[in-house]
Amino acid sequence: MLGPTESVAPQVVPRDRLGRISQAQALLEAAAVAARARRAAAAQPYLARLSAGEKFAGPVPVAARVALLEQRLAERIAECDAKHQRWQANRGTVSPGRRPVPVERNAKILELRAALSKARAAQDALRQAPDVEQTTVNLTDPQSRIQPLRGGGWLQGYNCQAVTTADGLIVATGVGTSPVDNQYYRAMIDKTATAAAVITGHRPSDTSDQAAAESIGIVLADAGYCTNENLTAPGPDRLIATGKTRDVHNAATNQPAEGPPPEHLDPIEAMAHRLRTPEGIAQYAKRSHIAETPFGHAKHNLGFRRFTSRGVARARSEWTFHAAVHNIGKIIGHLAGAPLPA
Image 1: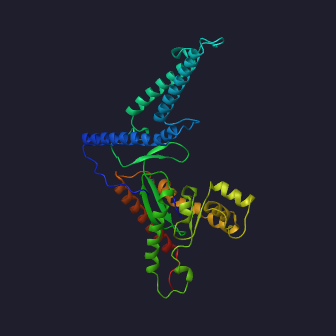
Image 2: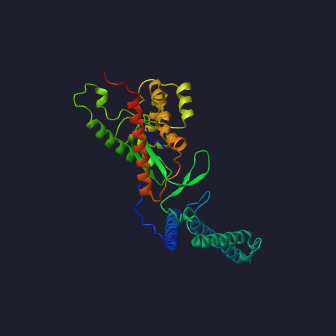
């Protein structure tokens, strides 16, 4: 079961405060350069469409907006000049028509010039501004990131991952900096498969129980891991929620399904079909207890809510050590409750 990792390149954190400040400044400057490059790249498709004469609806990047206003202003001025030329050519006729408004007093041209001036000011300000996502750097642990909290709020820290067996053992762990769980699914499953191979390799070779020979039965994961790539990736069978738990259970109750999913469904639709079957929802209902209990035990029973050292490498080591201690406790509890040999 997957609970709530992106690899982070090793980064030497200076021990003195001045060194950490210098490092943070370098990170901010690099982020500003990258942000300007992203903004320029984002404007290129709009500029190409502008050159082709395509009209826009809705907001566009500021660089493209400046080019669009410049083009429209030039077109409006040319149109106004053409009207004046036609009026001058017809001036000697019987009905030359009403004299056009001069360019410097044309309301539409004045409006476009004001909008262009405003857009150019915004463009100049944007060129000086750093990336809004990288305006702060943590000086004590630069490798950590802002993580959203369930129920609201934010926390500077890491995203801990764990894969737990049905009997409560943690067989794979990970610590990452990104709050997005779905990108860690395959890495965690690879770790799980490696751990399962070690476990099955140490079982008695004369066992006749076929179930014991199965390394992984089925993977249960919440909607945070649901993507087409994760649903179709190689590996063991899986049930991944396609929405919130209450919605999955409501769909199974109100719109039950039978049998395998139809072949024409895409991966997410096929998974939703499986979760509406009695077998699928019965299996998925086990996920919450299996996957969330180790996290609840760590936070609420043991008070393990923060790492004692900084850096993603040390955080991973500490989380792995916690999992090992957790497993030892599970094993001791299992042995204490087992019947004594005759």
